[in-house]
Amino acid sequence: MSFDGRILSGVSVLAAIVETGSFARAAERIGLSDSGVSRAIGRLEGRLGIRLLDRTTRSLMLTDEGRRFYEDVKPHLDAIADASLTASGNASSVRGRLKVDIDPFFLPLVLAGRLGAFCDRYPDLSIKFVTRDHLGDLVAEGIDLAVRFGQPKLQSLVSQRLIEAPILTVASNGYVEKYGRPGHPSDLSSHRCLQFIDPQTRQPFEWEFVREGETIEVATSGPLTFTDPKSMLEECLAGTGVAQVIGWGVGARLQRGDLIDLFPGWHGERFPLFAYHPSRKHPPAKVRAFIDFCLAVSKAL
Image 1 (tube, rainbow, N blue to C red):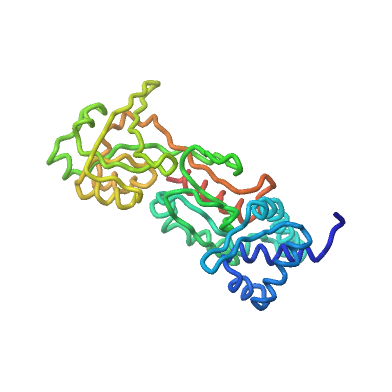
Image 2 (image 1 turned 90 degrees about the vertical axis):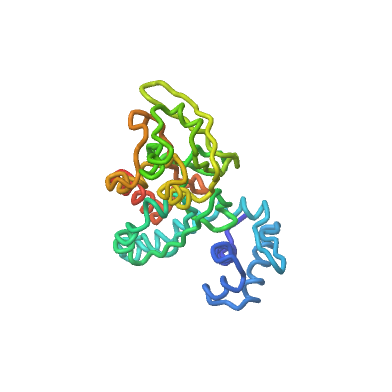
């Protein structure tokens, strides 16, 4: 197929629909009428010979063919945006909109309170965070980047291992005073342990302890099971039970004595943090900048 400039115009409309989630919001963003957006998508579908979107009164999503097409063309749109900024003499191409699917622990307990510095560095960039207990469909939802803990499962996404976080087993002073302090990880089988759901398996995480090459698993149970790490931490602070948490989020509470690190000699377990993006092409500058920021914050903790 020879290049048709009208295809590029249609792709721009498609990108606006994916990023905003509706024809009406896409029309508002790019300055067209709702009918103009519909006609542009119709013309693009006609030229490509495929249906790009499934649209009902309640939902809008990419078809399988539309998803594959969008995965292929989105990096080129980002590259065009970067190239235009460079050509115009702008020293920084980190601008526009960045939509991030982010881990529900990492955002509130690691990044929150530190994002102002990133905003000051890149004042022309706006970020929308999507926080949930599972990884969403990056392409269909117009998500540029995902930052998630745990081993990647989806082969269709490009993953980059960023850093590994220590796993700590903690309890409050109130809990220890009421129930006693376990002397060994195996003692936890008879303690009240707060459970946290693994979003990939939909089952509670197994409790594992590593020390100098020795690894043990302990069967634990407790009265509460969570998908929200912040709520689990609050219950741990209240003395409800023992919790396993990522060490980055509790350093200040350990220093103040709000929490006790129950097994300081068993810090060998590590939980990897990954960045995901939906294309194997070189990620745009705004994605690279946010990944670098996440790395810098993590290493400073």
